[in-house]
Amino acid sequence: MPGMSYSDQHLRTILAQTKTVAVVGVSMNPVRPSYYVARYLSLKGFRVIPVNPGHAGKRLFGEEVRAGLSEVPGEVDMVDIFRRPEAVPEIVDEALERLPALRTIWMQIGVEHAEAAAKAEARGVDVVQNRCPKIEYQRLHGELRMGGFNTGVISSKL
Image 1 (spheres, rainbow, N blue to C red):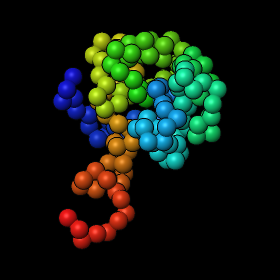
Image 2 (image 1 turned 90 degrees about the vertical axis):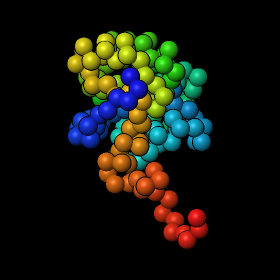
Image 3 (image 1 turned 30 degrees about the vertical axis):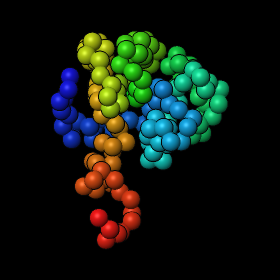
Image 4 (image 1 turned 180 degrees about the vertical axis):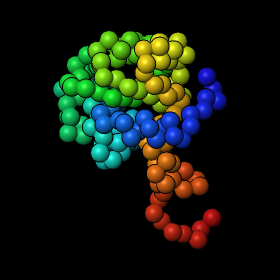
């Protein structure tokens, strides 16, 4: 599915309708992308439920880390997957089985799985692959600059 394109309106709608995100594969290490993406989303008002069996029971972003999606309390709008593509089918199956209010499966940059995506879409769940919700949120809300970063630093250095 390389080269998949999603309209800005489609991505805006997904992000606007999303209130709760389960981040599968989140790290407790603040320099890992899964950590800072989850942190960013929590700072933007999303409820972020961290999912990582290796850190179950710990707290992150005001929430208890869950071992799996079957342990996530309440309704979840989006599952954001920070795992290798070969892990995606099991995650999608668990999400479809355990999360009745699920609207979106979002696979991070470098993560794609056509069969799992088709299965979710057949159940009426939106799927975004090989994208980052943090980057898309920033891009759609004018928070990114040409280089993809908004450092807030003004410099004449090249």
